Length: 53
Image: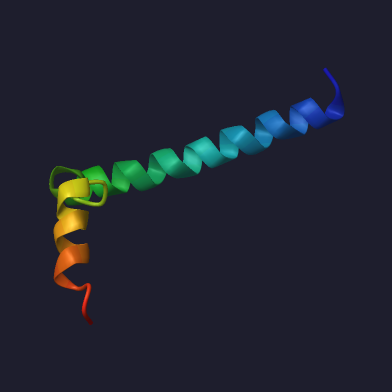
């Protein structure tokens, strides 16, 4: 396996481990159940409410 491929794999593993830690921390704090970041309906309402500001 070329050195570049190995480096990519190690970087990907580190990135995934970091993301898993953040998600685990969020689960422990109970954030996931109330996660509205990707609720597009709520985004539309917020956008339309704040449109004139």
